[in-house]
Length: 527
Image (cartoon, rainbow, N blue to C red; front, side, top):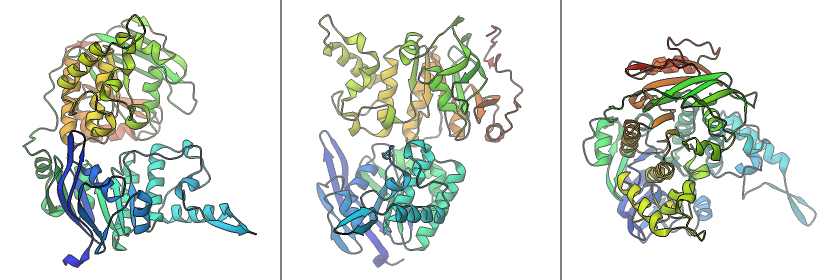
């Protein structure tokens, strides 16, 4: 293609924050009617660069040209008006408004009524329904957003970007909450937009997706642009090497934890919500990593949140160290040495406006409160510094706002928060969601090291290679029921998919959920 086909040109963009140089003279060009993938480790500067383009951040230096004209956006509204849309990684819809109101927010269709104008709800409904139909999205325009699943909300954000008739659409981790079917549908939309001359900037850590959908791949590392390459000329190993700046010969650390005696037993657990999980039974060994697999709608999150006391139970028993455990709230769960790292980092994890240290000590404040009811800053600072070191959290210091950290490092802070409560059982819900391959490896190392220390891990993951790579056993769910158990060493992706798609909910595993085979020992204790 000729150079005059570039719709967006980024030249020598730099941006610094206190203690951090996020972008260092980055130059990237994006062609009209193409998909440019932007890749790099967490903290490489990808999201910062996109926010500079979209008017959220003001670059310290450099120039951005759109269709040959220099542009400088003071806010995202100006970027939208100029023809640039952005789908953010962390979604922030208005839950108590309808899907169509979220879709047309800030640009409602109006109808005159004398000297006044009112929102034309009928036209908004028709236009929304037509757009969803055109994009093959099954969303009721009138439904409240709080009733939509995470994948439907992600689809709604994609529809909003398309509705702006943008010349450039930035997609930051657009498939993080989508099923495989929805990912295929998204790729169809992207190909259609590309054929219409729209430029797509596609940020993702999923290398297989990148190679499937992109025309070119730009790699960033430590705030700098490493290079832009034709996607057809790249392999997975080459992309990883360019991202991390070193050879990464293994995607998963060596597993040398040894599961022991049963520490936890769950017997015929059923949710108080009749549409959720039912009759779930499993055991967990000391030092064991139990993976939980399944498709969207399998009720995995609902299960672990109920175990942690966040959701009510209808029936069933939970035993910890052989004793019946009554858990009706997170406080009781913590007293039983349970910890939960939730799936949605932004919504239910971090407090963006507080420091790294404040976020770390949040679940264990009693440890730091002195005689006068004041927090012991010296002790909390010592613990925060120790966790920053042991978990290799990349931050200028413990007083840095957590919002200024990369996603991977925010996730490590959440690990630190719960490790400070000294749990015996750590429940992880999608612990590497939205995290790059290098940061994933570090988190896998932390998980395996905790298991070696005798901590028991329950890990939900939608990434089958992850389940296979670090789980000792894998429990698979479908539509709220357990459909089977697999040994981590011998299981395959096909085995997991077969169980995950077993909509008849007939157990087909050869393993007894009440007597899982831990390494070197069977759990004989009845639950």
